[in-house]
Amino acid sequence: MCDGWRLDHFLKWRIGRLSRTRIQIVIDEQITFPDGRRVKASARVRVGEIIHLDRPAPPEPDVPRYFSVIAQDEHFMAVEKPAGLPMHTTAKFWKNTLTTLLRERYPGQTMQVCHRLDRETSGILLVARSKKAATYLMQAFEHRKVQKAYLALVHGQPTPAGGTIDAPLKLLDTPTHMMMGVVADGAQARTRYTTLERYERHALVLAEPETGRQHQIRVHCTHMGHPIVGDKMYKASEADFMSYCDGGMTEELLAKFDGLGRHALHAHRLTFPHPATHEMTTIESPLPADLREYIDKTCGPSQ
Image (spheres, rainbow, N blue to C red):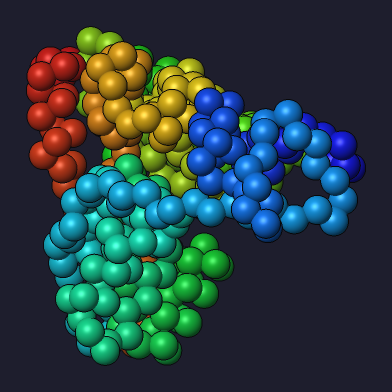
């Protein structure tokens, strides 16, 4: 399929998240033939040909390296993840992750995170403290026995003030390979929402997903015309999100992101069957200080 393509076009196809400028830098500095010869962007790739891509590990971005414990016993732990702390190792993060911090704080102990939150989402995460508890809790999530509720600051004021968003979701064919969208042939996705506070141009909404699709609340809020404040991908654009990933935050980008460095979504409440007693257990986390401060400074008093 790719035989005869220009090298830069081939790399763009294989690593779609990279900008063309970044691809040129990669070609100039990090790609060689096995014998050490450099290649050009216009070089044609051939079936069976080998080129070396030697990409040094970039400096790991600074993130909050902490978490607090809300509740725990010998079977589970409910932790509060700060916005900005990634869950697991990725190409960009390998030491600054929640799973690494759990290993550092509890060496030699079983600590299995049972679900996930986006890096910019703050709030409650459930951690199992044994293999048996992990199996039980992860099955509870899979079979929708866990009830989740999020707080989201959105643009505008939803009308009606409460209801259910029933819109199927599917991964879109976009450069980042991360963006979800409402598509007729997508997987079923339902989110209940309730407006808790109204401001002049915003609203604080309680969102309760009945399904667990990727980016579900973010996409559903955008779909109903009320995107989440600070959402780099669904309120701004995928191009802005990629610019942020490649070059970091700038004043221009921050303005596009509503002046907020992260999206305004917080995992507020989690109700789950206890792994030992099977009794329903509820853990809550209030709106964090950074979002409350943003509301006070930007949104004004509630109406």
